[in-house]
Image (cartoon, rainbow, N blue to C red):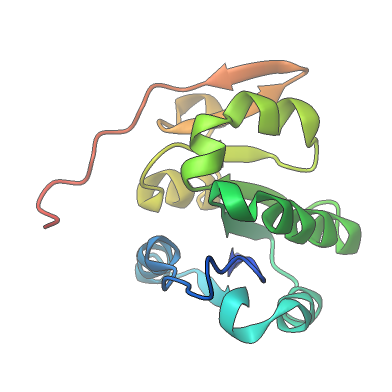
Amino acid sequence: MKRVLLVNPHETEQNGFTNPPIGLLYIAGTLLKHGFDVRVVDGCLEGKMEISKVIDEFRPELVGITCLTPGRKKALEVARVVKKIDSSVKMIMGGVHPTIMYRQMLEHYPFVDYIVLGGGEYTFLEIALGNDTSTIKGLFYSNNGTIIKASPRKYIEGIQ
């Protein structure tokens, strides 16, 4: 069973407020439903040290990090820490900033393996299942320096 860690980065509050990482919780629910061992760390509540502790103790095989533009430096900091602890971990970033700036993220931050476009529940699941990346919709990645942009995934029907 693959171990998956989902992280809302530390110190990304805006004007003293933070939103719960709903997108990460949707992804966690999808992965749990399919038998994955999942942990979610909300760095805004639990802090940088807790993120590092969970990475070190849980030893995830996949790490997903949510990223808004104001928190991009902290999200990239978490990604670097993960890769420093274990360079074989697949690093997946999602959220508004990576979705819009996917080319910059993949060209300038080689420790980011994948960028998820939009809602990530099924895109992340397909990565976790080990599907061929060239068949996964809603995914950006680099292949020998060439940025691959998959076709967008349709929105999930019936969510209100």
